[in-house]
Image (cartoon, rainbow, N blue to C red; front, side, top):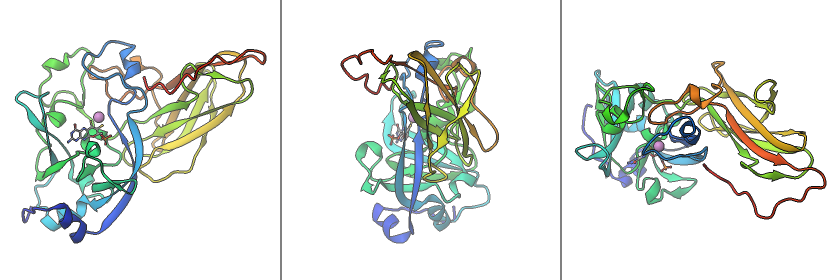
Length: 317
Ligand SMILES: Nc1nc2c(c(=O)[nH]1)N[C@H]1C(S)=C(S)[C@@H](COP(=O)(O)O)O[C@H]1N2
Ligand SMILES: [Mo]
């Protein structure tokens, strides 16, 4: 860069235009649990479809801060480094990531200090974090310490070694920096949120709802629902889009016969892509980017059957 900047939170607040983006944060490990049912993934958390959320982020544009520093010709990547030190890599190193300069200069990437109109809490990255809408959560570095403009992607463990799609037969413990496919945009995916898994439903029409998300600049165009294992589909209604960077909530109401019901959902995006059918098709050694069809089983009761006591509760696994 033309000149190195050292900026306090007060400098960001006073020296740059404040802006707001509604964006979905989604971990690359979202929906990993169903990959685990294909084959074990030691050491990784068995998350269901809840490793994601949508918030209103307030901060300054990374592009404005980079412009103030003056980005030179050889700039291809913008790397972030944080205050928290991880012992996963040997030797231990601070958390870090990088994004391509084109993304960094696009207006949606923020250095944010607030979420949903409240100062960030410590756990979400206070005082300032990066928010990279449309990219996997791992790129949205919390507790940001240093921003470096460079020719190559970050050599940080969490960019060079982790958050990569390795071939199925590779042992992740033996993976080297640069192995596998580096993740950036979130893979097109969806999840059914209601009814919850194993819930008992009263007789009558059932409302089914969930989210769908297409990473980076792609958008959700359609969500299909099937109650016959994908033989036939009908289209759910898409709720209003909160922002180009937010998930799309959807809902539909179906009439079902009493008994155990399996509902499946799949989304389509603005490139015409849709989701693969089964987690077997996307299994990878670290369990990232499971974008196979959403699937949910619950019981539609007979008219005279009693509802069992106790709520099934929202089970994230
Ligand atoms: N400094 C730092 N930033 C980080 C991480 C981390 O461990 N350290 N985890 C990343 C990952 S993997 C995700 S999914 C998101 C989660 O953001 P949240 O904690 O606000 O939900 O933060 C990202 N930023
Ligand atoms: Mo994550």
